[in-house]
Image (cartoon, rainbow, N blue to C red; front, side, top):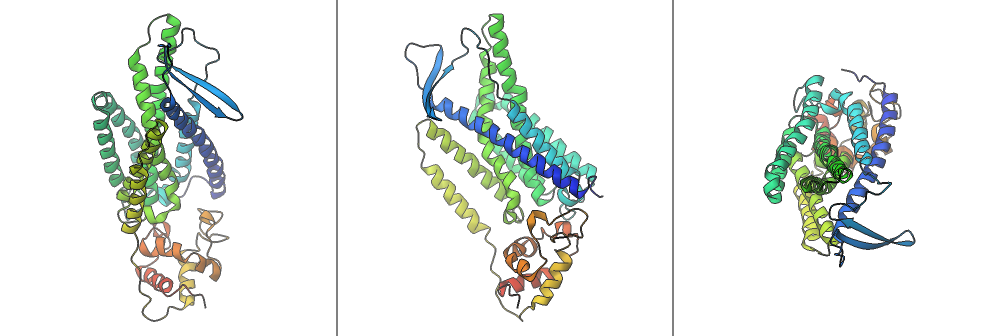
Length: 396
Protein backbone atom coordinates (compact mmCIF):
# COMPACT_ATOMS: atom_id res chain seq x y z
CA UNK A 1 0.00 0.00 0.00
CA UNK A 2 1.50 3.32 -1.09
CA UNK A 3 1.76 6.32 1.17
CA UNK A 4 -1.25 8.66 1.04
CA UNK A 5 1.14 11.62 0.77
CA UNK A 6 3.71 12.48 -1.84
CA UNK A 7 7.34 12.11 -0.71
CA UNK A 8 7.87 15.88 -1.00
CA UNK A 9 4.83 16.64 1.16
CA UNK A 10 6.02 14.06 3.69
CA UNK A 11 9.46 15.70 3.84
CA UNK A 12 7.95 19.09 4.62
CA UNK A 13 5.53 17.73 7.22
CA UNK A 14 8.44 15.87 8.80
CA UNK A 15 10.52 19.05 8.95
CA UNK A 16 7.78 21.32 10.31
CA UNK A 17 6.31 19.00 12.91
CA UNK A 18 9.68 17.60 14.03
CA UNK A 19 10.96 21.15 14.57
CA UNK A 20 7.76 22.06 16.42
CA UNK A 21 7.95 18.84 18.47
CA UNK A 22 11.51 19.53 19.58
CA UNK A 23 10.72 23.14 20.52
CA UNK A 24 7.62 22.21 22.52
CA UNK A 25 9.46 19.28 24.13
CA UNK A 26 12.33 21.51 25.25
CA UNK A 27 9.88 23.87 26.94
CA UNK A 28 7.90 21.06 28.60
CA UNK A 29 10.96 19.17 29.78
CA UNK A 30 12.54 22.39 30.98
CA UNK A 31 9.54 23.29 33.14
CA UNK A 32 9.33 19.73 34.50
CA UNK A 33 12.98 19.71 35.47
CA UNK A 34 12.82 23.22 36.89
CA UNK A 35 9.79 22.79 39.13
CA UNK A 36 10.95 19.47 40.58
CA UNK A 37 14.34 21.06 41.26
CA UNK A 38 12.57 24.08 42.76
CA UNK A 39 10.59 21.88 45.16
CA UNK A 40 13.81 20.20 46.24
CA UNK A 41 15.50 23.56 46.84
CA UNK A 42 12.79 24.89 49.19
CA UNK A 43 13.80 25.72 52.75
CA UNK A 44 11.37 26.26 55.67
CA UNK A 45 10.47 29.89 56.40
CA UNK A 46 10.42 30.77 60.11
CA UNK A 47 7.09 32.17 61.24
CA UNK A 48 5.28 31.34 57.98
CA UNK A 49 3.15 28.23 58.48
CA UNK A 50 1.28 28.99 55.26
CA UNK A 51 4.45 28.42 53.22
CA UNK A 52 5.94 25.09 52.23
CA UNK A 53 9.22 26.95 51.87
CA UNK A 54 11.15 29.44 49.81
CA UNK A 55 14.40 29.61 47.90
CA UNK A 56 16.74 32.25 46.55
CA UNK A 57 18.11 31.97 43.02
CA UNK A 58 20.31 34.06 40.79
CA UNK A 59 19.95 34.11 37.02
CA UNK A 60 20.02 36.53 34.13
CA UNK A 61 21.82 39.25 36.08
CA UNK A 62 19.52 39.35 39.10
CA UNK A 63 18.23 37.70 42.28
CA UNK A 64 14.91 35.88 42.60
CA UNK A 65 13.05 34.90 45.74
CA UNK A 66 10.48 32.17 45.12
CA UNK A 67 7.88 31.04 47.64
CA UNK A 68 5.62 27.99 47.56
CA UNK A 69 2.38 27.90 49.56
CA UNK A 70 1.32 24.75 51.36
CA UNK A 71 -2.12 25.07 49.83
CA UNK A 72 -2.90 28.54 48.43
CA UNK A 73 -2.43 32.23 49.25
CA UNK A 74 -5.21 34.16 51.01
CA UNK A 75 -6.03 36.01 47.80
CA UNK A 76 -5.70 34.64 44.27
CA UNK A 77 -3.12 36.63 42.31
CA UNK A 78 -3.64 38.12 38.87
CA UNK A 79 -2.28 37.18 36.43
CA UNK A 80 -1.74 33.52 37.33
CA UNK A 81 0.57 31.71 34.91
CA UNK A 82 -0.29 28.13 33.89
CA UNK A 83 1.98 25.47 32.46
CA UNK A 84 0.01 23.13 30.22
CA UNK A 85 0.21 24.03 26.55
CA UNK A 86 3.86 23.03 26.28
CA UNK A 87 2.74 19.50 27.24
CA UNK A 88 -0.25 19.49 24.90
CA UNK A 89 1.68 20.78 21.90
CA UNK A 90 4.52 18.32 22.49
CA UNK A 91 2.10 15.41 22.29
CA UNK A 92 0.06 16.83 19.40
CA UNK A 93 3.15 17.49 17.28
CA UNK A 94 4.68 14.12 18.21
CA UNK A 95 1.52 12.20 17.38
CA UNK A 96 1.21 14.08 14.09
CA UNK A 97 4.76 13.01 13.23
CA UNK A 98 3.89 9.42 14.11
CA UNK A 99 0.84 9.59 11.82
CA UNK A 100 2.77 11.12 8.90
CA UNK A 101 5.86 8.91 9.12
CA UNK A 102 4.47 5.64 10.46
CA UNK A 103 0.70 5.44 9.97
CA UNK A 104 0.59 6.94 6.47
CA UNK A 105 3.59 4.82 5.47
CA UNK A 106 2.80 1.75 7.54
CA UNK A 107 4.14 -0.83 5.09
CA UNK A 108 7.44 1.03 4.81
CA UNK A 109 8.04 1.99 8.44
CA UNK A 110 5.57 0.45 10.91
CA UNK A 111 5.16 -3.07 9.55
CA UNK A 112 7.89 -5.66 9.07
CA UNK A 113 6.43 -8.87 7.56
CA UNK A 114 9.32 -10.88 9.04
CA UNK A 115 8.18 -9.78 12.52
CA UNK A 116 4.38 -9.86 12.12
CA UNK A 117 2.44 -9.96 8.87
CA UNK A 118 -0.09 -7.23 9.67
CA UNK A 119 -2.34 -5.16 7.48
CA UNK A 120 -2.17 -1.37 7.71
CA UNK A 121 -5.46 -1.29 9.62
CA UNK A 122 -4.25 -3.93 12.08
CA UNK A 123 -0.90 -2.24 12.69
CA UNK A 124 -2.30 1.28 13.10
CA UNK A 125 -5.18 0.00 15.22
CA UNK A 126 -2.79 -1.90 17.49
CA UNK A 127 -0.57 1.16 17.86
CA UNK A 128 -3.42 3.50 18.78
CA UNK A 129 -4.99 0.88 21.04
CA UNK A 130 -1.73 0.50 22.94
CA UNK A 131 -1.50 4.28 23.45
CA UNK A 132 -4.96 4.30 25.02
CA UNK A 133 -4.37 1.13 27.05
CA UNK A 134 -1.12 2.54 28.45
CA UNK A 135 -2.93 5.44 30.07
CA UNK A 136 -5.88 3.39 31.35
CA UNK A 137 -3.69 0.73 32.98
CA UNK A 138 -1.25 3.26 34.45
CA UNK A 139 -4.04 5.45 35.82
CA UNK A 140 -5.76 2.44 37.40
CA UNK A 141 -2.48 1.42 39.04
CA UNK A 142 -1.94 4.92 40.42
CA UNK A 143 -5.46 4.99 41.91
CA UNK A 144 -5.04 1.58 43.56
CA UNK A 145 -1.51 0.39 44.23
CA UNK A 146 -0.15 3.93 44.05
CA UNK A 147 -2.33 4.98 46.98
CA UNK A 148 -0.55 2.48 49.21
CA UNK A 149 3.05 2.28 48.00
CA UNK A 150 5.05 4.27 45.47
CA UNK A 151 7.69 1.54 45.43
CA UNK A 152 5.13 -1.12 44.57
CA UNK A 153 3.72 1.18 41.89
CA UNK A 154 7.19 1.73 40.43
CA UNK A 155 7.74 -2.04 40.30
CA UNK A 156 4.43 -2.53 38.48
CA UNK A 157 5.21 0.21 35.96
CA UNK A 158 8.65 -1.26 35.33
CA UNK A 159 7.14 -4.71 34.77
CA UNK A 160 4.65 -3.23 32.30
CA UNK A 161 7.43 -1.44 30.42
CA UNK A 162 9.37 -4.71 30.18
CA UNK A 163 6.33 -6.59 28.92
CA UNK A 164 5.42 -3.83 26.48
CA UNK A 165 8.95 -3.58 25.11
CA UNK A 166 9.05 -7.31 24.52
CA UNK A 167 5.60 -7.36 22.96
CA UNK A 168 5.97 -4.46 20.53
CA UNK A 169 9.35 -5.68 19.26
CA UNK A 170 7.46 -8.83 18.21
CA UNK A 171 4.68 -6.79 16.61
CA UNK A 172 6.18 -3.81 14.78
CA UNK A 173 9.27 -3.00 12.75
CA UNK A 174 12.31 -2.56 14.99
CA UNK A 175 12.64 1.21 14.87
CA UNK A 176 8.88 1.73 15.16
CA UNK A 177 8.78 -0.55 18.21
CA UNK A 178 11.10 1.74 20.16
CA UNK A 179 9.03 4.78 19.20
CA UNK A 180 5.83 2.98 20.19
CA UNK A 181 7.11 2.48 23.74
CA UNK A 182 8.18 6.12 23.90
CA UNK A 183 4.83 7.27 22.53
CA UNK A 184 3.00 5.23 25.15
CA UNK A 185 4.98 6.84 27.98
CA UNK A 186 4.56 10.26 26.34
CA UNK A 187 0.80 9.69 26.16
CA UNK A 188 0.76 8.82 29.87
CA UNK A 189 2.67 12.03 30.58
CA UNK A 190 0.34 14.33 28.68
CA UNK A 191 -2.73 12.52 30.05
CA UNK A 192 -1.34 13.13 33.55
CA UNK A 193 -1.31 16.84 32.77
CA UNK A 194 -4.74 16.91 31.10
CA UNK A 195 -6.71 14.56 33.37
CA UNK A 196 -5.01 14.96 36.76
CA UNK A 197 -2.60 17.87 37.19
CA UNK A 198 -4.60 20.67 35.54
CA UNK A 199 -7.93 19.53 37.10
CA UNK A 200 -6.18 19.60 40.50
CA UNK A 201 -5.15 23.19 39.83
CA UNK A 202 -8.69 24.10 38.76
CA UNK A 203 -10.11 22.54 41.92
CA UNK A 204 -7.70 24.61 44.00
CA UNK A 205 -8.81 27.82 42.28
CA UNK A 206 -12.55 26.97 42.49
CA UNK A 207 -12.21 26.28 46.21
CA UNK A 208 -10.49 29.61 46.81
CA UNK A 209 -13.11 31.52 44.82
CA UNK A 210 -15.90 29.74 46.72
CA UNK A 211 -14.27 30.44 50.07
CA UNK A 212 -13.97 26.78 51.03
CA UNK A 213 -10.99 24.65 51.96
CA UNK A 214 -9.43 23.01 48.87
CA UNK A 215 -9.42 19.22 48.66
CA UNK A 216 -5.81 18.26 49.56
CA UNK A 217 -6.20 14.89 47.82
CA UNK A 218 -6.37 16.61 44.44
CA UNK A 219 -3.08 18.38 45.14
CA UNK A 220 -1.46 15.12 46.26
CA UNK A 221 -2.54 13.38 43.02
CA UNK A 222 -1.27 16.28 40.93
CA UNK A 223 2.08 16.27 42.69
CA UNK A 224 2.40 12.48 42.33
CA UNK A 225 1.77 12.59 38.57
CA UNK A 226 4.11 15.55 38.11
CA UNK A 227 6.93 13.60 39.75
CA UNK A 228 6.14 10.55 37.61
CA UNK A 229 6.39 12.70 34.48
CA UNK A 230 9.76 13.90 35.65
CA UNK A 231 11.08 10.32 35.87
CA UNK A 232 9.55 9.31 32.53
CA UNK A 233 11.27 12.13 30.65
CA UNK A 234 14.75 10.71 30.03
CA UNK A 235 13.49 7.24 29.06
CA UNK A 236 11.15 8.85 26.53
CA UNK A 237 13.97 11.01 25.18
CA UNK A 238 16.04 7.89 24.55
CA UNK A 239 13.29 6.34 22.44
CA UNK A 240 13.10 9.54 20.41
CA UNK A 241 16.86 9.51 19.76
CA UNK A 242 17.32 5.77 19.32
CA UNK A 243 16.46 5.90 15.62
CA UNK A 244 19.96 7.26 15.04
CA UNK A 245 21.51 4.16 16.61
CA UNK A 246 20.49 1.02 14.70
CA UNK A 247 22.95 -1.12 16.68
CA UNK A 248 20.40 -0.85 19.55
CA UNK A 249 17.03 -1.42 17.91
CA UNK A 250 18.51 -3.75 15.28
CA UNK A 251 19.84 -6.23 17.84
CA UNK A 252 18.17 -9.61 18.35
CA UNK A 253 17.43 -8.62 21.96
CA UNK A 254 16.42 -5.04 21.19
CA UNK A 255 13.64 -5.09 23.79
CA UNK A 256 16.10 -5.85 26.61
CA UNK A 257 18.49 -3.14 25.40
CA UNK A 258 15.60 -0.67 25.39
CA UNK A 259 14.55 -1.57 28.93
CA UNK A 260 18.10 -1.34 30.27
CA UNK A 261 18.82 2.06 28.71
CA UNK A 262 15.46 3.46 29.78
CA UNK A 263 16.12 2.26 33.33
CA UNK A 264 19.50 4.00 33.27
CA UNK A 265 17.76 7.20 32.12
CA UNK A 266 15.29 7.04 35.01
CA UNK A 267 18.14 6.33 37.43
CA UNK A 268 19.99 9.43 36.21
CA UNK A 269 16.85 11.44 36.96
CA UNK A 270 16.87 9.98 40.50
CA UNK A 271 20.44 11.22 40.89
CA UNK A 272 19.63 14.80 39.86
CA UNK A 273 16.46 15.01 41.94
CA UNK A 274 18.40 13.90 45.00
CA UNK A 275 21.25 16.23 44.12
CA UNK A 276 18.85 19.19 44.08
CA UNK A 277 17.66 18.12 47.53
CA UNK A 278 21.23 18.20 48.82
CA UNK A 279 21.93 14.47 48.63
CA UNK A 280 24.70 13.32 46.29
CA UNK A 281 24.32 9.64 45.48
CA UNK A 282 27.59 8.93 43.73
CA UNK A 283 26.73 5.27 43.25
CA UNK A 284 24.13 6.25 40.64
CA UNK A 285 26.45 7.80 38.00
CA UNK A 286 28.93 5.00 38.66
CA UNK A 287 26.22 2.37 38.20
CA UNK A 288 24.95 4.15 35.08
CA UNK A 289 28.43 4.23 33.53
CA UNK A 290 29.03 0.57 34.37
CA UNK A 291 25.60 -0.31 33.01
CA UNK A 292 26.24 1.41 29.69
CA UNK A 293 29.67 -0.22 29.47
CA UNK A 294 28.13 -3.60 30.23
CA UNK A 295 25.50 -3.17 27.51
CA UNK A 296 28.18 -2.10 25.03
CA UNK A 297 30.22 -5.22 25.79
CA UNK A 298 27.14 -7.44 25.69
CA UNK A 299 25.93 -6.34 22.25
CA UNK A 300 29.36 -5.88 20.70
CA UNK A 301 29.25 -7.70 17.35
CA UNK A 302 31.59 -10.60 16.84
CA UNK A 303 34.49 -9.72 14.58
CA UNK A 304 34.50 -11.40 11.20
CA UNK A 305 37.89 -12.85 10.27
CA UNK A 306 39.30 -11.38 7.08
CA UNK A 307 39.74 -14.77 5.49
CA UNK A 308 38.81 -16.31 2.19
CA UNK A 309 39.33 -15.03 -1.31
CA UNK A 310 39.53 -11.24 -1.67
CA UNK A 311 36.16 -9.73 -2.52
CA UNK A 312 36.46 -7.43 -5.54
CA UNK A 313 34.84 -4.04 -5.08
CA UNK A 314 33.02 -4.45 -8.38
CA UNK A 315 30.82 -7.11 -6.76
CA UNK A 316 30.19 -4.96 -3.71
CA UNK A 317 29.34 -1.95 -5.86
CA UNK A 318 26.85 -3.99 -7.86
CA UNK A 319 25.09 -5.21 -4.69
CA UNK A 320 24.97 -1.76 -3.14
CA UNK A 321 23.70 -0.08 -6.29
CA UNK A 322 21.01 -2.70 -6.78
CA UNK A 323 19.89 -3.17 -3.16
CA UNK A 324 20.80 0.03 -1.31
CA UNK A 325 21.06 2.94 -3.74
CA UNK A 326 17.41 2.35 -4.65
CA UNK A 327 16.70 4.74 -1.75
CA UNK A 328 20.16 5.99 -0.73
CA UNK A 329 21.03 8.06 -3.76
CA UNK A 330 21.10 11.67 -4.84
CA UNK A 331 18.12 10.77 -7.02
CA UNK A 332 16.34 7.79 -5.41
CA UNK A 333 14.38 5.40 -7.60
CA UNK A 334 12.11 4.70 -4.65
CA UNK A 335 8.80 6.56 -4.74
CA UNK A 336 8.93 6.93 -0.96
CA UNK A 337 11.78 9.46 -0.86
CA UNK A 338 12.74 12.60 -2.75
CA UNK A 339 16.27 12.61 -1.29
CA UNK A 340 18.49 10.01 0.35
CA UNK A 341 17.17 9.10 3.84
CA UNK A 342 19.29 10.75 6.55
CA UNK A 343 21.56 12.08 3.79
CA UNK A 344 23.26 8.69 3.35
CA UNK A 345 24.18 8.13 -0.31
CA UNK A 346 25.89 5.29 -2.15
CA UNK A 347 26.43 6.90 -5.53
CA UNK A 348 30.24 6.76 -5.53
CA UNK A 349 32.86 4.25 -4.34
CA UNK A 350 34.03 6.75 -1.75
CA UNK A 351 30.51 7.13 -0.32
CA UNK A 352 30.10 3.36 -0.10
CA UNK A 353 33.44 2.89 1.67
CA UNK A 354 32.78 5.76 4.09
CA UNK A 355 29.58 4.05 5.26
CA UNK A 356 31.08 0.55 5.58
CA UNK A 357 30.53 0.36 9.35
CA UNK A 358 26.89 1.39 8.95
CA UNK A 359 26.38 -1.16 6.18
CA UNK A 360 27.84 -3.79 8.49
CA UNK A 361 25.47 -2.83 11.31
CA UNK A 362 22.20 -2.62 9.40
CA UNK A 363 22.68 -5.04 6.49
CA UNK A 364 25.19 -7.66 7.68
CA UNK A 365 24.86 -8.03 11.47
CA UNK A 366 21.12 -7.42 11.26
CA UNK A 367 18.63 -7.34 8.41
CA UNK A 368 17.20 -3.90 9.14
CA UNK A 369 18.15 -2.72 5.69
CA UNK A 370 16.96 -2.66 3.03
CA UNK A 371 13.80 -1.61 4.85
CA UNK A 372 11.51 -4.65 4.92
CA UNK A 373 14.01 -6.06 2.40
CA UNK A 374 12.17 -4.17 -0.31
CA UNK A 375 14.96 -4.78 -2.84
CA UNK A 376 15.32 -8.49 -1.94
CA UNK A 377 18.91 -8.57 -0.69
CA UNK A 378 19.96 -12.19 -0.26
CA UNK A 379 21.84 -13.75 2.64
CA UNK A 380 24.70 -14.55 0.25
CA UNK A 381 24.95 -10.87 -0.65
CA UNK A 382 25.00 -9.90 3.01
CA UNK A 383 27.84 -12.37 3.67
CA UNK A 384 29.75 -10.97 0.71
CA UNK A 385 29.39 -7.42 2.06
CA UNK A 386 30.57 -8.63 5.49
CA UNK A 387 33.63 -10.31 4.00
CA UNK A 388 34.53 -7.16 2.01
CA UNK A 389 34.26 -5.03 5.16
CA UNK A 390 36.32 -7.51 7.19
CA UNK A 391 39.01 -7.28 4.48
CA UNK A 392 39.26 -3.51 4.97
CA UNK A 393 36.45 -2.17 2.76
CA UNK A 394 38.87 -1.44 -0.05
CA UNK A 395 37.62 0.19 -3.24
CA UNK A 396 40.75 -0.50 -5.31
